[in-house]
Amino acid sequence: MRWLICLGALLLSAVSVQAQAALAALGQRPDPARLEPYQETITREEFERLLRTLYAPQGGWEPFIRLAADQASILVDSRRGDAGRMVLRFARSEEPTRPPRFWRDSGTARLAGLANEKWNPLRPLAGRRIALDPGHLGGRWAQMEERWFRIGDSAPVCEGDLTLAVAAHLAPRLEALGAEVLWVRATTEPRTPERPETLAAAARETLMGRGVARPPADYAGYEDPRKEESVRWEAERFFYRLAEIRARATRVNARLHPDLVLCIHFNAEAWGDPAKPDFVPRNHLHLLVNGNYGPGEVRADDVRLEMLVRLLQRVHEEELPLAETLATAMARATGLPPYEYTDDRARRVPFSTYVWARNLLANRLYECPVAYLEPYVMNSAEVFARVQAGDYEGEREIAGRKRPSIVREYADAVATGLAEYFAPAPTP
Image 1 (cartoon, rainbow, N blue to C red):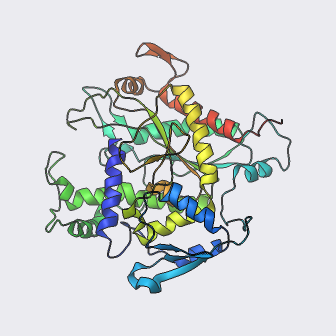
Image 2: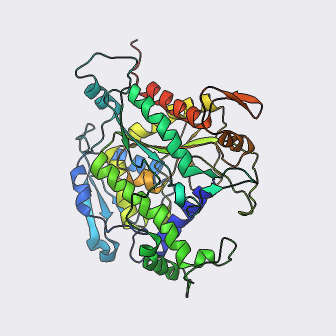
Image 3: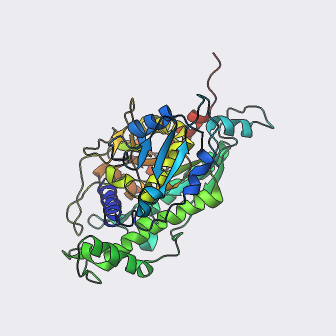
């Protein structure tokens, strides 16, 4: 979780230093017209329930979203004060108008897939458009993005390359099950045209807003005590953590229009000295769905509007049960225990063991259901040994047990979970 903790800290600090502008780092000024299609598509009771239980249970949204009996007054432009508010009218009926969205829920997709054929139990994903988003970049960017480590004389462990390997196995499995597979990224090259050099000015402004009066232009290696105050360090993080995810979101929302995005990741924990990383004794699994926006996050105009688009589309109605089914299948295949958050960045979904609600950039910006997968701790001795064994057919004895290759086990578990979720309920 070290990498996720760093990302969360970056996003929260980026929101706080831009409080005056009320935008997240690299965020765009929100267009109030984005909420107009959702007029009278949700009741007041459901709107408030979702805010209080899933999307913003920590509170802090009340000054920005004022509830009345028949409408919500939403601040969309903090620069204008109350003049920057818009009204969202609530539905008067318990069966409001269907919210507009490009993705199809499981029932709608099933009808599309079966329009011209009978149900085939071997193709339960017929009619589904599933996008694969292998996390991070890998390749020549892996060390910059801190998704690379080596222990002793081993081959380097690179998360961006591992996630691509999982996706390469997963794609044909999903296609054999009837899905149309789309790729958010299929290589180690970035989707964003930005580079750290082009983001240096934004990085400098952010650092100065954070109180670094004279940020150094560069840092002298990972041991430099001022590296996190340097423009280069901040610009690099803007590149691979923010600009790249925003570019992927544009691809998902404007071009691919999937019914589901699978964000494929591996986990890791703090390993001590980066020059001499060490193993940790823990290995675990969890999945993330969008939610649990903190008070600092809902202050940003763009973050607040992005949250409301997901809420009004009822993405959770597909996202939550799908994540639970996937988690069950992955736990069964891997035997991994659940990860436990010990702070308020995430909140466990009720009645779930492995699924947590958390606001990440990808699962907020992608305007469709997102399953954000976080299995395996790469710097645990067991997972490290499996990664070193590479990809192979069949099973090999690793760490005292016969196992498939870790990337194939991962892909098989996800494919199995999706097949189980999208299969029709048995006839009573």
